[in-house]
Length: 296
Image (cartoon, rainbow, N blue to C red; front, side, top):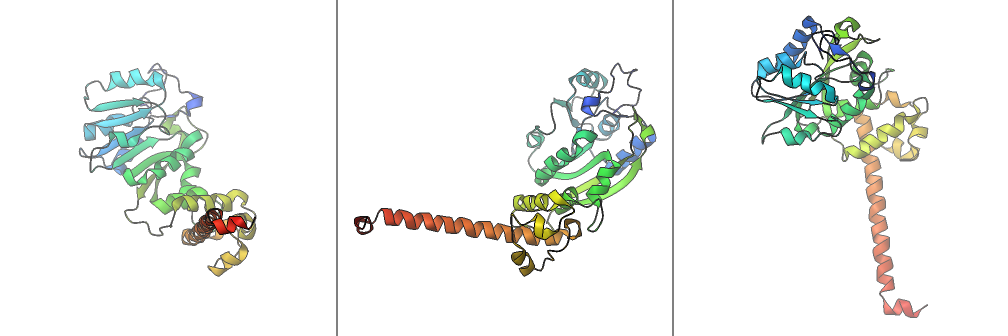
């Protein structure tokens, strides 16, 4: 992110990194007010760019960890914020970064960032997987992605991202940011979203990995009915037994209904595994029984 045009800073935005540097002071101030950073926060910024948002965050907190993939930006950031001893730069890919390593006991992370459009969805799923160590997240994303995060059942934007984000977090779209606030300007509108992980999940699944699998299968063919999209995991009779209308398309079901399906699939897998263990145990017993061996 940058307050100055990229040429003035000696760095050209790179398409392969999905870089669009924020320079609009009004938008920057609005984002910082939404985050409301405090000196006690364990704050980490993803993709600081040239430091447009980094600067007011440091002014508010006095300390900040940033994760930056573009190595050419590292010296720019070091030079710009040399007078902040608690400013720490971690060069690398946020998808591979160990966020637990920067946490002190009893702390939770507050994550902020202007996420590159080309990898924003994988990054969000990565952060959701670490929800237990996160207090909240504030992201600049493509407006379309924010709409998908917040979408409800029965809408075209509702899908895998909506369900998994809302399973782990309260999703709050905050405001839209136009292309002119960036350098270079993107071709689409952006938006700021707040994600707050739940202390207690409203619809806890027996196994969230099974839930992810169920949702992925359901939306692999959006135009098909649940009878067809989920047939590899659970049959129509079992779905109807838990109150699911198998003639519906996947975007019609609520999060609670997907959790219900996930629990049924998990129970089926557990029962199958138990039966397999029983069969193996019985087979071993026969093989070790001298009388049974005499019969052959």
